[in-house]
Image (cartoon, rainbow over the protein chains, first blue to last red):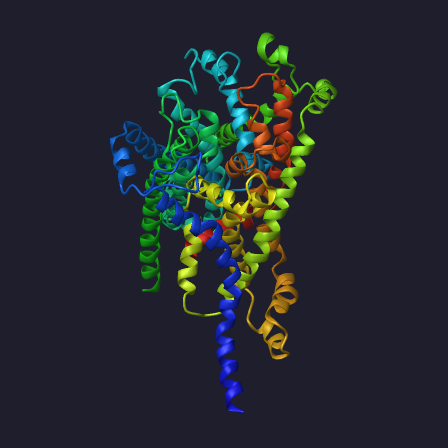
Length: 300
Length: 276
């Protein structure tokens, strides 16, 4: 009688693994195996014409990378783009959340409109912004002319291309931040806010000393999410400027694509990718450290 | 409680500015679709929606293979949803209900997938798809998409299952009901809203996806809407109003469903990052 019980127990211990086996195998084949392969590829001279074959050339691609001025441009663009989209995206999203947190007539509609940028598919968003930014006929230039600023080469000048992309990015990201912050604002107890107000604190003071401490952890979390997304973002940059003019908007991720499918150099493209991955992992690491510290503080 | 009238006025003004920035591009998409090319490029765009141009817009749209593209998009999106929910619910169930060695590591791997740029694995996937004969194949595209939406689905469904007390399943387990049966018939009905949210997220991840589709599909016949629309960029044979009309048709379902399940989506995307 005892033998079947034991084997039964063993069997029960295996049940969780039976559950996770198929999904994990799936991710292994379509996510982690390509990732490893990408790492390997960065050490080879693989070309797009024959992508399954390539000879091992050691760190040659990385040497090439470090000697390429475009690499430093891309790294710089990626960092600047990520930092500024986090600052403006999280800033604008939080302001939006604070603005519509209290009931007012038409709130449901305003809330829906504020979410448009987040809900519109990337390619459709790119098409409309391309038209808004259009040189001779776009409405953005009509606006700047009306303001007396003259015409702007939104996407075709080195100075303006990255800021123009950032405007689109903030338009897309701020609504998501707003939704997250609205949820966080629910956690601020009304009584505390009212008490502070009764004690004579003005709006700014109430915000800084009562509201902000409650929503700061969430702001941190959403900042890290937005940062990771900015490092990953490909479509709108590639479709708005193609990384140009002269590489001035080519983030690491866009540079992977250009190197692989325009220069046919899969080895070098993979080296760009490896740097991009390290950057994203660094952000993830920062996130983990913050989370762990918070967990420790909360358990105290 | 009296409020400062100046403060509420400035708040009202702020809301108007924010709503204009957020809403204008979408309004402009509709307005552009209802202009004709001579207005757009010569006499100047008419800013209000000229509904009288609707029949002309429809006949222009008929010259764009928008229906074929939307059908491909729908197939890709539906395939992505089915795979993501099936695998994601099984994975989410295991993470929610069992304590086993390696559980933390799996959570970390899932979190990792949310950090990996698509552009990073597109090159090796391209090589793998050549070997497997999945290039230029809608199924191959679905398989690639699922890698990114499966973890999100698993996070959302795990979160929802965590909220269901174990007692609910206990009687079914004692009755020797197989686990997968419990998942389908006991758990699923209880987490229907989260299932719907996970479905919407996976569906529109597949609906919006561009990079994989643009890389893996060569046949115009197989193009989804995202790739078809992108092919209009820098090309002037198609009237701009038709391009904008097509973009609008492509956007409406995404906007409608995102607004419908917004709160659940946010909960899902942030919980993945928190619980990692």
